[in-house]
Length: 194
Image (cartoon, rainbow, N blue to C red):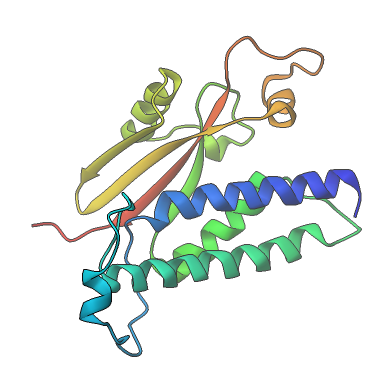
């Protein structure tokens, strides 16, 4: 594997990690539980007060299933795109295949938006009011922007662009831009409204 392929593979893994973090924290998986784990009342009572945010077993089960699906889909996409001699694919483009797989499995939509760099695809231009507000918020220094509306939770998170990304997105091949550049990752999750 050459250096460029290793860089692409690392960038893909980083992007998958960001995706996992962004949606793995509070999303339900459509897969039903197969069995209830045995819980020890004494073990729960004996947990240390270590400052770790804890969730219920049901939440943990759903998060673990979702994370499993994300990691399995990421592995599949990595093998499909990065272990071929005839072509190379940018990690952000490969992630779009991962987004499509995860949407089929979980009904969670994800996609890129340009924030303070040139969009590399017309599909990445902020399209609706939420995406435009999110791009402005991230440009202003916020790490995330969220909105709940019409039965959907939407979250846009900042994705810092590294030197390799910035050179293509900005056209600054010989110098680094003065300001940090970002893309945005938009995740949409259907919710139950009260």
